[in-house]
Length: 521
Image (cartoon, rainbow, N blue to C red; front, top):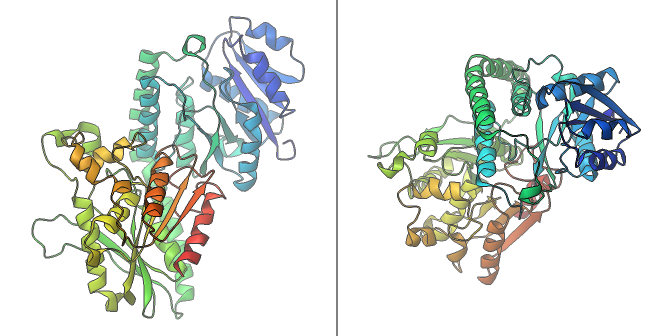
């Protein structure tokens, strides 16, 4: 670790029951451990003075976790370190997961590596679960990036890249703020699976003050949302403009060769009464007879992860000789997610997304000659809720209108099993119909696999923290029982939301792309 200039920083406040074991376990993994004693008033101070081999930073008054991290990071940089792994002093984190962060740092130098807790089977309060979902949602609003776990303190920080950032807060909420600021300034954020230990409820030590700290987090999110509009968004647009200018210059230099084509989005319902605008963006190729894929990004049927699971996927397919069409199908929208207004008004709900995909398939078939594709080789690929959408097309559409093949990637599958992704179910069914058993059953895809289902390419990860891995396993079992040609790739690591990215997920899960290209041949 010293060769990579990585140290460990442990902030602590009144963790007398756990701090010694945490520090000694950490010293077994790393020789360079900085402990920041944030004004402890229990036995923590005496315990730390008895431990050899650590660098101790301490002060008399409790200042908060954010302040402690700042002091620890400053000490680390003074000692010549470029990276600091942080873990909590309450014993929840396993020190022998430190090599996981070291490996991720080797693969993603300069990135902020965020631990993603394996919470399978862990008993947590409903307040804790809500707080994590609340934090994840607002992080996405403020940065446009999805992280499955924005509240864990187990991370690897690139110190030099964070130097000079102006923190607004000094306590519990500072960790969230730091991730948002890092994202705004172009620091790559990478999730990696970690283990977590929660002791019995009566043995847990927490300094979280539910009312006061939740209020502080709410105020911080309000400020960050405002800053996102007046600072981060313009910064991002400037960065994108610079990138596009560079790409345009490169494009001009390449003119004259047979370049792939990106056409303007078309409204697939143009001329049809009673439908909103639904855009389909073609990524076509020179020549004729190409295989084509309609790409359906995920987003819990409430929104779209349109870049990572849409356009980025389409560009990758196009670069590998496959025409692609990104479908921005109808979703419930963020207002429906926040307000539950669909208890009173219909809004967008089932079967709207399915109707959009059916229309997109028919539209592309009708324009096959124009787009240079084989009308009999039009498939569909979907991610998360988009995976449910494309699989519903393979099962529920009339045979003549089904895609030639489907690729559900970390898909939502069931609407009735205990592993259901409740947000996607609510997004698709609508608030007034979530308890409709017949509708739930009809859209539980593991129950309706036909014998003549088109071939399926199925992918997910065991550590997926968003859509439980059993969704894909249920579908695999149903496909097998009905003798449907398919391949099921279940990776140990990778999480959720990696799309066709070269940076998200893990090197293991990113293998799916090459395997898909081999499968589709």
